[in-house]
Amino acid sequence: MNEEQRDLLLGSSDRVPPPQGVRLSYGTAGFREDASVLRSMLYRMGILAALRALKTNAVIGSMITASHNKESDNGVKIADSNGGMLNQEWQPFAEALANASSSHDLFQLINGLAEKENILLDGSKSAQILVARDTRPSGEALLDAAKHGIGSIIGAVAQDMGILTTPQLHWMVHVRNRGLKASGELDYFNKPSGPFTCSLNLSPNNSELSGWDHKLVVDGANGVGGQKLKLLKESLNGLAIEIRSSGNGEGVLNEGVGADFVQKEKIVPRNFGSLDVGIRCASFDGDADRLVYFTVPSGITNKINLVDGDKILSLFAIFIKEQFTIVAARSEATKIDFQLCLGVVQTAYANGSSTRYLKELELEVVFTPTGVKYLHEKAAEFDIGIHFEANCHGTVLFSDYCISMLYPIHLELSNVSNGSESEKAAFRLLAVSKLINQAVGDALSGLLLVEAILQHKHWSICDWNELYRDLPSRQLK
Image (cartoon, rainbow, N blue to C red; front, top):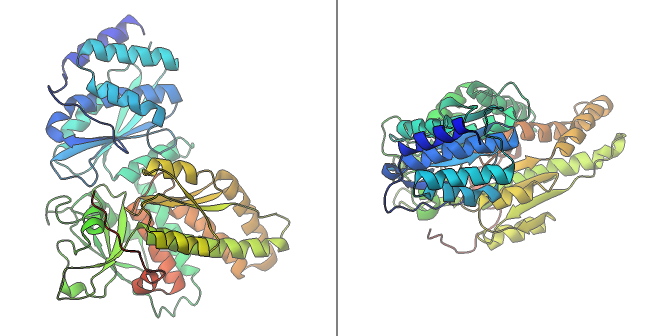
């Protein structure tokens, strides 16, 4: 580290002292705490994001959010170079950095990491960090603190992406590091809407939607997800979405609303009630990385019929396995051998009935410790890996090898049997790979995939919920 960098760090950190008597812990995805004690931590996580960018020679993201926590809380999630969560080996350093008691201790930690990781802190390299926030009132000031930290590393530049959902920022980091130029918010909205429409057009007997209702009512948790869904739905055809608790003054963020509330309490969120009996409903959480479905069974009780992450996983698994099987059977008509590995990843919190059901479908089911970072890592070992926690975090991953196989198979099937079910199945798998956010769980893209599959299968939400009967359980935290 040269002298200029040393003086810059010591000078800037003196202006952002840590709060007295507060120790912050790095959780599953980052830090969360009362916003009033987070300015120093955000400054330091800006430094960490800059160091990570220099280490990886890649774009890194910093998302200011506290997800499903109450509105007075805030926090940060670091999007690593692959668009996923911060590398686990760096998480202890993040916690040490956040809790350094003085500017001198902070400097020693930074210098030690730079030496250990061979990070040059002499201004010879540039680094880009994308920063964004959700709709919390404290977000703007805390984002400024993060940008101040990024600016404390010579050569590091913060690009303010404004107000985003957490999955949007992760996706932007993911695609930029894959060399794709289309990586802004408009590109994010265009990405799923096209495949969604294509999926609907390829539904068998598309005009005979006996069990599928076009209407969907979404609880936006009074957060950023409702605002972004309003923008996304303008580009959708074939789906009527009503958004409540949209984040436009209808209530307080995550207060009696949102996926976390619905999944744990199993009662209707605010702004829902007896008029919604029998209608397909969904809830996002505060930063739109969780998705849950539900129905209101009766107008005389506030109880709901919950369709949780296990049921979402099962729906995705059924559809993908069906298409996978069709393509594999017909690949014999092509010159390409279609031998890929499909797997499902769960944790011990998964309902036992869901695991039994998936195994009856002859799917490979593996378990990891609790925490979406563990599931995501394991799912990446499959050619197509589907992972979900019961608390509604999850997504679908397609390996580069899988995509490299699907494109020529689809092309060859188009030549051999254009319009056949096998050609359509290959196209559907490609559409899913484009529709779903493979960087992290994403309520927006996940909702579109659920809706496309339900329409494809002509299923109502009741049909879906009857796939299996959940064993009795209750999540307390």
